[in-house]
Amino acid sequence: MTDYKQLDAWIDAHFDEEIAFLQEMVRVPTDTPPGNNAPHAKRTAELIAAWGFDAEKHAVPAQEVKDYGLESITNLIVRRKYGNAGDGGLTVALNAHGDVVPPGEGWTHDPYGGEIENGQLFGRAAAVSKSDFASFTFAVRALEAVARPTKGSVELHFTYDEEFGGLLGPGWLLEQGLTKPDLMIAAGFSYEVVTAHNGCLQMEVTVHGKMAHAAIPATGVDALQGAVHILNALYAQNTHYREVTSKVEGITHPYLNVGRIEGGTNTNVVPGKVTFKLDRRMIPEENPAEVEADIRAVIAKAAAEFTTPAGGITVEVKRLLLANSMKPLAGNRPLVDAIQKHGAELFGQPIKAMGTPLYTDVRLYGEAGIPGVIYGAGPRTVLESHAKRNDERIDLEDLRRATQVIARTLADLLA
Image (cartoon, rainbow, N blue to C red):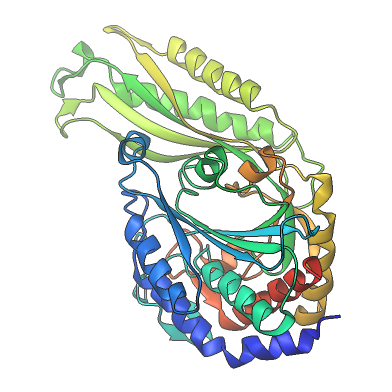
């Protein structure tokens, strides 16, 4: 049996070093868009090399990245092998993503500073999910220093395409045949182990009208008014979505959000073109093809209803992203059991196994037949973390304890 207290003590003794590593991760911006993420991968590889971790650098071809709408992606794999082939040991992958949305406004701390105040570390991606670059790395270091496994292996997957859906992150590594672990843990929050999550459909809708001088608006077709008519029809769907409930704890019902609108040419011109982008979250029980067909039908019906003396509108609808939901695979039980056991002891409260309304790139491992869960450093909720908002932060005690949970879990799985 591994002495869990020795693992905990090693992490305690090296915790200042772990914090400093996380600060370095935060200080290299990975705003996506624009998505120039290769510099962060380079810095990560440089830092972990000091601990004997040789990171394989897998650069996604430049044209493929450009066609995807990003600037650069270099995914990293660190392979730590403890036994011989055929010894029956498991390969466990730990995945965290380095790409993140731009910081936005309203920060009281430097979003790239890694500043510490009142036991919290602030910065964009401090909680989601550069914190798990640190927790996963130091859990593996503790494992090797204390438990010293003699069979199986651990892989660190540091990827850079979660915000755009993961196809050029974990999806690309899996498609290229660069990895096929037996089990995997992906970055998450430390007060629950997530076994399922929502899917996400993102679409771009372009409404075309007819430009005209604002002094004679009747000669034009106002694309913004047409877009508003469509938006009202889409928002009305949220009322119907509340009637569709999920059986997965932690997930409620589907919903729709419009996060970006742009259009028009000037204040004194009737807008001839307006574009908006929508985000439709799908519960695990929904069929993505049916969801997309329904959205397109709502848009088409609303567009047909909108008419003016000068004519109607035309609409183009383009799918931007389709991320399937994550459904639990039967083989994830050892992960769930170990994390719940150690999490309960270290956090002093039960660790639930549940779903989350987020979508992640973890689903791609599941689609490849690899059982996995979401667990890592972070507060109780997305709201507390300020993820995708100003002043994102992580409680350093949560970082410490999550690192200890992961180290103990790896020791159990590789025993």
